[in-house]
Every structure is written in C-alpha cells, then in structure tokens.
Image 1 (tube, rainbow, N blue to C red):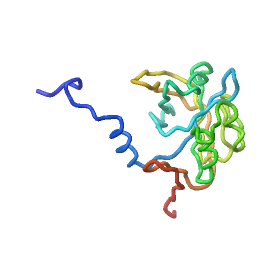
Image 2 (image 1 turned 90 degrees about the vertical axis):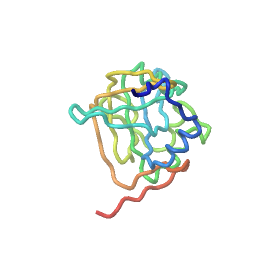
Image 3 (image 1 turned 135 degrees about the vertical axis):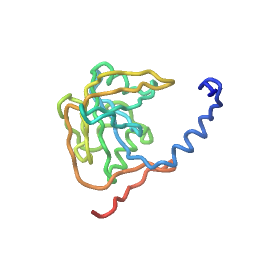
Length: 172
C-alpha cells in the first residue's frame, strides 16, 4: 500500500526555497501590455511544455500586479536576460523601488506579434498567447502558445544561491 499525498509529510517553505536555490536558473523578465501600460516581473519559473506546437508555461504569484495584464490581454513575453542586464533585473525585482511602467525606463524595449514588451538586448524572447491558466496554491500557472521569437548574443544572467550573477557558457 502506498501513502496518499495527504498522508505524507510536507517540507516548510524556507527549506523549499533553500533547496531550490541550489539550482542555477536563467533569469527572465515576463512582460505584458495592460490597460495601465506595460507591466512585468522578474521570473525564474519559465519552462517549455512542448515544441510542437511551441508552448511555454510561467508561474505567476497571484500577488504580482503583472498577472492582471497577462490575464486581461491574454498574452505575455518571456525575455531571457543577458549577463549585462543586472540593472534591468533589479528594476523588475523590486530592488530599485520601481513599479508598473516605470520599470521599463531601464533598457530598450520593443514588441513582437502580441504587443507584449520585448527587451531588445535579450538572449532570447518568446512571445506567447495565453491558452490556459491553472490555479495551484498561491500561483497561477499560465500556459501559452509561442507566436513570435527572437534571439540575441551574449552570456546569460543566472540566479544561484540567492544571488544574481553572470553565467559563463563553455567555449563551443
């Protein structure tokens, strides 16, 4: 007989984040256009779902103000940050004390197919339309079909053990 999930112990939130911090992850800015203007947040949870059709998911905390823009406009862009984008990451993380459209004063921005803001210096961008939203705990898992994409040059900005740092890729 196997235990049901309800009967198994759960780890505490602090342990969860400490262990998750042992995984280096590329930093992204998830953006959308909204009635109040461009909106976005620093995201660490963007992932691919499938390549055919090209589909991504992002996890968005329900307290994040950008969620309203994503849900109302039914689109989002995932911008993979280059190592040089520390100030952009800070603007979108809240460290700089900026919110809403003021976050977009850092860096150069454009759009692709959906109108979601796209960071011009990004290593890569996926522009998506929302297909589905799954509510789980305190977050909304937003699944989107990719309708536009672009690539850039450089090394990645990564998050590891609670710190933002440039990632170094091996020589090809």
